Image (tube, rainbow over all chains, first blue to last red; front, side, top):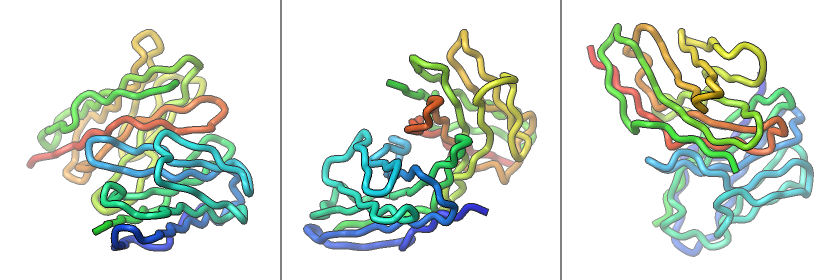
Length: 111
Length: 113
């Protein structure tokens, strides 16, 4: 079974803090993605990566950066957290056959 | 650019009634279409997908969807709703390159006894 794990289910941070959200997949998938989910807006793509050290901006990259130093790990970084980044963050990896596998999500609250 | 429109942020049905969740897409290339379900406090689970071939796709838990190119639609149906179907449902579109998965805004299904 493919597993996509995220480092925390719930996270509370203060405004201005640097925040790291970690995602790990165990099936050697090339492509990994970070989405944020907000009520009424669905899931929106923040960043994705199709190889180690490669990254592409998604639809809402402002205020975020990413890191992919190893194939199995894709990190989302909030350089200076703001209250409008309070959201559910979902990581996903893609198998070549067109199946995305999603992690359980991290609910981030910025106060 | 690809996009998905889900009509109705909330749909209410009685247990045993037909479930119909609507999804229309926009794509300049042949689309790959997906339905995901999210139960409370859980991640996304794939219900079904259309890539190529048969346009009527059967998924898990008795759900099915039909790809209609002429209507640019991929509506999700289930003949008889169960209480356990109460969840949020997301339609999504991608292309053959699978570079991105673009989601609709979601439809929350409410099932009453």
